[in-house]
Length: 109
Image (cartoon, rainbow, N blue to C red; front, side, top):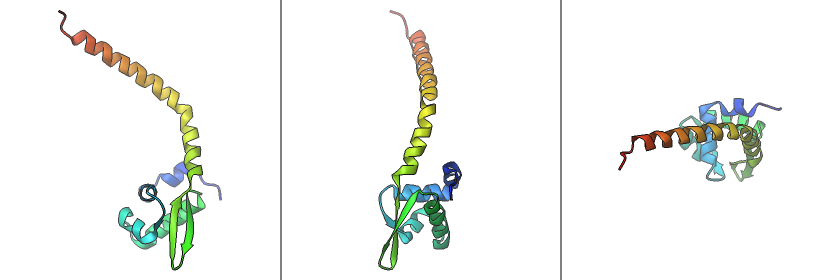
C-alpha cells in the first residue's frame, strides 16, 4: 500500500513516535512513555508507520522492537532539496537587507 509520506507524518503522535525512534531501536513500552498515548494507540500508529515504510519491526522473544528506516527520510530530503535553493535565495536577500540596515544605523566617525 503506497501512502503519501506527508499524510503519514501529519499526525503529531506519529511524529513523536518518530522522534523517539531517532535514538535507535525501541520496544513499544518505551515508545508509549514518550508518545503520551496508550499502548493500543501507539501500536496502531506503529502499524501505520510500518505499512508506510517508515519503521521496521524485529521480534525479540515476547517483544517487538521498532526502528526507523532511512529510505523514506532520504526521499523526503530529496524532495525538499528542490525547495532549498528558493529558501536560501530568500534568506540571503533577508541577510543582506539586515546587514545594510545595521550599517546605516552605525554612528559615523
